[in-house]
Amino acid sequence: MTSALTLPNGSQLASSWPEAPSGSQPLPHDLDHLLALRVPGLIATRRHLHSHPELSGEEFETAALIARELTLAGLHPRLLPKGNGVICDIDGRPDGPVVALRADIDALPLTDPKEVPYRSTVEGVCHACGHDVHTAVLLGVGMMLAQLADAGQLDGRVRLIFQPAEEILPCGSLEVIEAGGLEDVVQIFALHCDPNQPVGKVGLRVGPITAAADNVTVKLSGPGGHTARPHLTVDLVDALGRLVTQVPALVNRRVPANSGLLLVFGHASAGTRYNVIPSEACAAGTLRVMDRDTWERAPQIVAQVVRDVIAPTGATVDLEYLRGRPPVSNDARAIGILTAATAAALGPEGIAETPQSMGGEDFSWYLEHVPGALARLGVGRVGGPTVDLHRASFDVDERAIPVGVRLMVQTALRALAAVR
Image 1 (cartoon, helix red, strand yellow):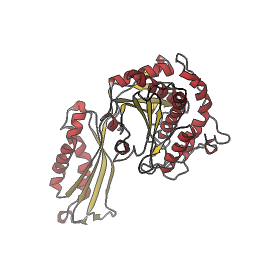
Image 2 (spheres, helix red, strand yellow):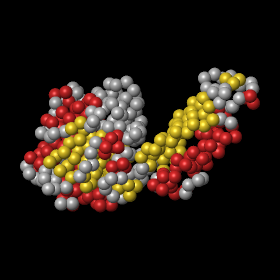
Image 3 (cartoon, helix red, strand yellow):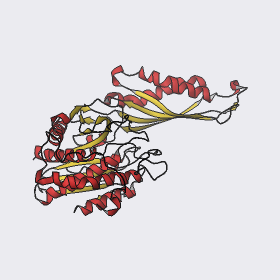
Image 4 (cartoon, rainbow, N blue to C red):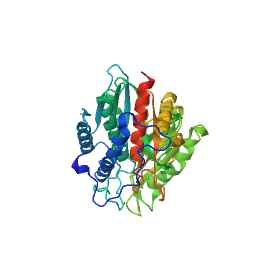
């Protein structure tokens, strides 16, 4: 690793993880020893990324760092057209299949409150979803697989995808696909941090593992006026109240109960003065749903319910329904590969069941084109409270990094062997 990524003075790593956890199988070509040597550098990389986060679509320095580290490993990365993401092929047997591994690299617009040496140095930006861990893990995987390719022991090609803009719409996965990121790929795999699982556990599930997620913005307008004479204007505060309280409940009544539809407004605003009825009001939120059929129908249902609720108020409605991402639906064969890889990397006790989450993940767009699967990597911190994803105080047990590397190396090797 570069000198810029050495561990901060006085910092303490989490207690070390064994080179080969009990019950696991050794990695080929003495990679367990190489991984043990690389772990401090990978943790330093994660901490550097955590200290220097970049928002979705602006991951230029992050992408440049990734490209430098891959180049030092003897690989030939290429930047995405905008320069904020990286694709890198590790070439093994030329007539073998192509398997892709993906990590997202963007941060969130949150202020980091943690008192740690690697606290974010960028005001209002924070890695609160574990994408810094995903990136460090995939860099480690690239270093390990490059060694196998040099030794002639890689039965095909592994494509590393460092994807920007997972947290926003339009999704960065679509940008990668447009740039040819899935060309010749037969399977694709990814990890996502899970603070509800301890280190050494990997959550697996066949079928839907996340929900579909869309953005809904409703703007209301009217002539405005004096609060003493609401009958002469349109009371937008009243209309906004009806919107945010009635619409979610009524939308739920238009779909099957087992569809798991959840419409929640996270923003609402109207007016600036206590005695002035405003001329504009706005509410914005997300619609999440577990099944694909209801997701397809959701825009029409929401539009009709919003019109029906607001019509009696006299307000003018401008509805923006931004289609986000379908559910991530894990392929059964791909989960079989991940299950075998987890048992090999961590022992059978590392395999854990995981429920379908209401969170959205744009890995789903890759699965619209090729089969694959997303696994949940346990990062829960021992002895501390569980802090959920997307909270600014979110942090991880860094022992999860070598666990993730072992898992994804085993996954890539088994995927290549399965389609050989």
